[in-house]
Length: 306
Image (cartoon, helix red, strand yellow):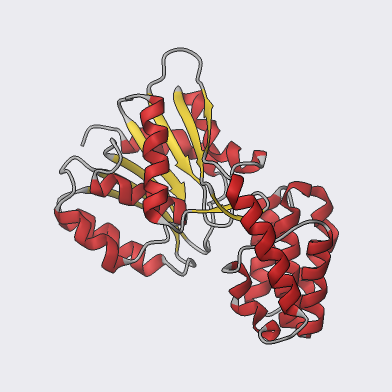
């Protein structure tokens, strides 16, 4: 497979991981990581997880120690990853946990929500607000470009980055109340737009959907890519949601959330709410190839007359 960008590399690493080809995945990262320096924290973490799987605690620990030497760190929830299970209880792991916790506390103390806005030529035809996934952010151009493509179709685009720090350049929306408050403050600062589409990937998509369905956000449209939702949380929201709420969901049939998302889309339609479900065969928990190029069409579908 030709590796054109970080997304290609991520898909291939995950494919090898799912096949149990851990050493092959490590070799691939070694070959390609230098092309994507902005993703260095992610690569060190992947290497630690893969090395633990392939060769046990010593190998995984070396990659985390190397990350620490580079000034990196990770939230303790990331370090609870099942792939790092061989390190549990290892006395050599404890100093790293302490160091990472201290670095996280220092970073979290100064972290603030960030909003990046991109303007189209001429009068905007609407506002698209996008939220990143968990352990992600908008500090990399590739992450931003997926959404800013909508400016060419006349949309004002705003990229909201959480203040919940997960690692260097990595952020989360785990505290939902805090996430909703931050995004609502961004929306207030942007002013009213008709239409406003709330969008996002994975956990960010779940926050966007929750805000629209509960009325926490002044918007009636959402565009969700691989939303990380739980049916027992989201289904009850449908009865009280505004009747003009509309959704557009993209999901791969290889995504671990596929069945739950499929059921939710059906539940939306059963509740009388419009919902488009776009299924991509063979796709895991990821953006589909060519997402940016087709984004304007999806926004047009979402905002077309019913």
